[in-house]
Image 1 (spheres, rainbow, N blue to C red):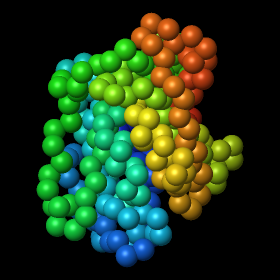
Image 2: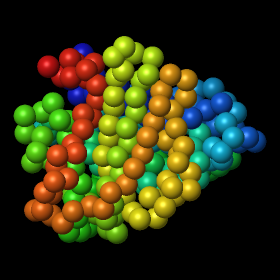
Image 3: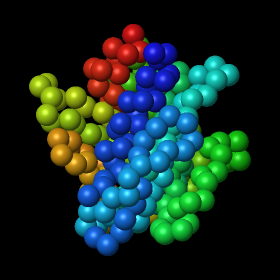
Length: 225
């Protein structure tokens, strides 16, 4: 299996846990390579009141690999919109689209940063196991001025497998996370923690770079070795 495809498959497994299934809302739940997937319609757990689709694209060289996940989320998660991270030189684009009822049949648009205007803020975006970790960063766009850290621990493993993703987000998204701290809550054997910190100006990451965590656990490191 090629490394980018292996990376995408692991990310899809991670996103599938973020999309919590289990309220009165029913959503299609699935995860697959490509830009579409089909799965069973499942009842959402309490607090998850909208259906969400996350389209993920990994770019390396002149190639791209895409994957998609569908499931239940709190409405507050819709504020994430588009977020980007990097891993070992690969750009990982993610786009969140929320819907209810018949609107969920509409196709998710193309995932691209070409029309997004970068601002003067940046966030960390790499694996601490990478030798060039300290000079990796995400350039924020539009009115994004906060760094979101999503950290998930698979507590069923010994030792636990930790997965962390950084993203540029808006202040409104961080406020939503404070109101709904379980917005990315995992289910079963996973524990998820999120936090926001102010983004730094471009060229001045400073002590923030010391906080750079692993994007994935030991399994991903092995896949990409």
